[in-house]
Length: 66
Length: 206
Image (cartoon, rainbow over all chains, first blue to last red; front, side, top):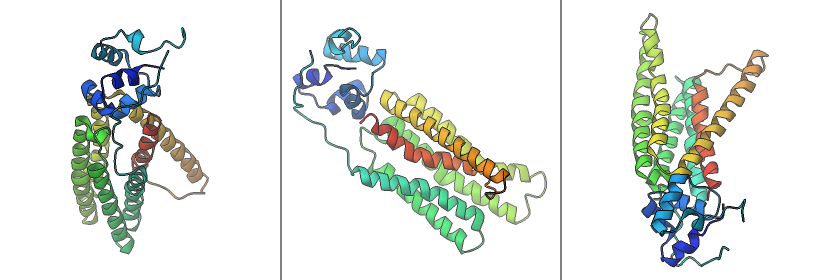
């Protein structure tokens, strides 16, 4: 699933490791989600949305609609 | 519309390099199986001691893997992974050798001939059963979704491979084309293959 994680992370000057620490996940998970190799669960997607202060649909792109 | 922004602070790559991890994984996995088979079939001769040395080297490779390849983004670098490593070290590095060699000693000295033979025979199997409980506990404690997904995939691949191998070997044995292999080799083969399939499963997400 395409997403804006890399953009949002770069805007804040965070590395993948920084974001991983804030989410309590591995850096590999952040990388896998960013590159669209892994779709996060709904709870993790909500945590990402809260962290960046955006609604989920502003972070993740619904490819069926797009 | 997605735009691409260069990462201002790219995360460092985990070290040591992948090929070192692969060699250590192969040594730890295949060394344990080959060594265990040599001990089982060649005990009492030079081959048994060579097998014991091979198992010891496999344990060293496994310890190096846990100690030096446990990057923070790896499952071994996370709290649940460290607990998993400790439990595995105690179960397979301490309890299993004690029970295995104690059972072997009791068997060789005639203690296993009567009903006492049943608990003596079952004793070395208990740590192996315990490893499945340790895996189940790790899956419950680890909160990282990618690591859990990779482990689940690796468990399925290893299980399928082991069952396929056991089925093919079983028919070869039935038709007299292969020697008998003791059933305890099945979980050993499963865990050895888990050592191969886990890094492969993790590659899907890296």
